[in-house]
Image (cartoon, rainbow, N blue to C red; front, side, top):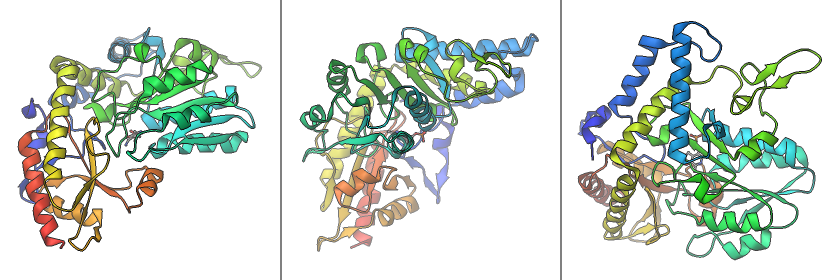
Length: 405
Ligand code: PMP
């Protein structure tokens, strides 16, 4: 699928053709995105929103068109609900600051799950420390799915917010966020969905899902680094205070009283990443020209093939084997005598053969602790990967396992 549009895939690593299976960490960029960045700086760079001059107006128009594209991608009610941030981590920190300041007091509770990325744990922990609130954790069942009955038990009149990943960055499994949202809303509790790993792989519709907030990163969806999105329902964003102060986010400033700008600018202090938003808009156009449904179907086939081929290898343990996955598969390799081969060793030997995978705790230490391993090896696919990539990866892994016996 359009491999030729991604120039980096022609690079050689240690003299071997690159097989890039680290897409859950970041995706490679198509030429249209790379060109967009050069075009922005080469043709119309100027600070947005404040200028009457031509270039500033062009930059503003392109930045706002990109916001519309993101709104279209996520199916929001309006583009005012799209706040540009630096990435998923920044979005969650902003939400924890803004929602936390306005809505959370001592004794209140925030719920996350055992399988969250650190960026969906630590900002909530910091909020709890600031406010004297309590962080509750949805446990996992034996098959590593979220224990929904236990979740129901955690919801109480003290719960203020639930924040969960739609797709686990370690296991690749799809969590039942719709059910979580339904149960939380029945108690009047707001839900934030970490879409970092889902928006690039599934067709996400925030209105259908009915989440209150959703966060994502452009770089995981063929877009540039340094740009992310915080989606919030307008009712919430109107009500919540800005998380950061500065230029752009104000209406009037005086030492006596400052008033804030309208949505979404109230949440966008300082010069925004308009080059990034423009390039992300191009990535969205690119993805939509292929079709998100077609991408999801193709990646699903690849992930199933990847897991089938892995399962044929001796002494490989796949986590959440057989479960519905979007993009990523995590595993560990054992020696014949049953001793775990450290994931780093596997990763290094794969790298020597030109295969890029990620090893370690994947910024999800509580989940890795739960699995009682030092880490995992994670292979994750994107639309430009092929069955041949997976065959090369499996052959390289076979060799690595033999060397590590
Ligand atoms: N949440 C999940 C589920 C992720 O996979 C990641 C990135 N690995 C993040 C949050 C953080 O994203 P970023 O580093 O782009 O802020």
